[in-house]
Length: 413
Image 1 (cartoon, rainbow, N blue to C red):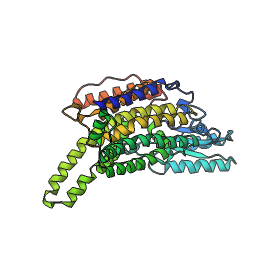
Image 2: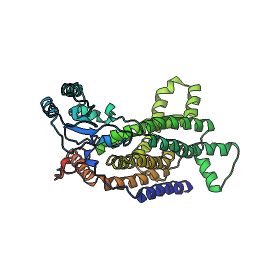
Image 3: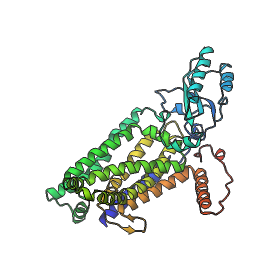
Image 4: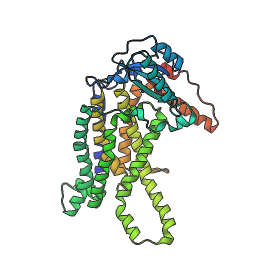
């Protein structure tokens, strides 16, 4: 129960921090003009060139609607009128992901600009068109990448120092207490005994945690750009896939002593049977961990990404809030990937421990923030999901009255 109270206090702390942030939920006036939104109309736009003075403004087009259609003739007609392009770049939104159309549009636009004696960078933002492209939309694309800004890197340093120190404490303090027979309080002693792993395993998990975190910090803005162009279903699936990958790594390291012992006493005749049993035991741990990590990180992360991408001055504060979220979620998630916690709630599908319930609580807070930011888009998504399930079960769904054009900041369905 001491562990449950500690984890619940983490969730409440994050809830208070998120809800008390004064500007959270306020929509920036530039929001609908973000060039990375998945529902932007195909066409030619202008956007400011990248600037060190305001490194976030270049993601917003000067107009909500395209200045020219996405066609060779439309591009040529607009650019031959010699619009004022000093300090701007040409953004072509909507070429398909596959094939060479994107490169052809870019080359043609650069050729027309050169013929007109105009210098302006050309950027391509591709959109999935075919079923195959939509199925592969979960994958990151090169146009998602943006360089970190200095303020993000400063936050990243503090995140490493604070967040990792807490994770390291959770992983290393219990085995150190056991090894040197240290005692703090009866509650902490009982908790340390419950979650303690061998010291070598704890060190290895700390190394793995840092290895996982470095690319997530380095590509923080790219992950935000990736997330903002996905619909809710794709966002959940993306996080579930990432969670299964990370959960497998943490679980494998936590079980490495047992694996070494098994390999040292290997009975080849029992290998198929033992492999199936070990795989099932692993899934019983990493799948719930990944599901509840998905619920917490998708809702919290999406809320922060949407808020960030609706204005040209929010990358620093988003980095701060993501660091706070990571400080709360990361140690709980790591605990959930190791078979060290006793079930608190037992269901026919899976057994839930205190870490799962804590991530569920954090996910509920994140879902409330997400709904505040994108209520209409989420309502349409939920109705569509309900209709799909109804059709699959043979029932008639509910007809929706709104479309993605009603709310230009909503995700594409």
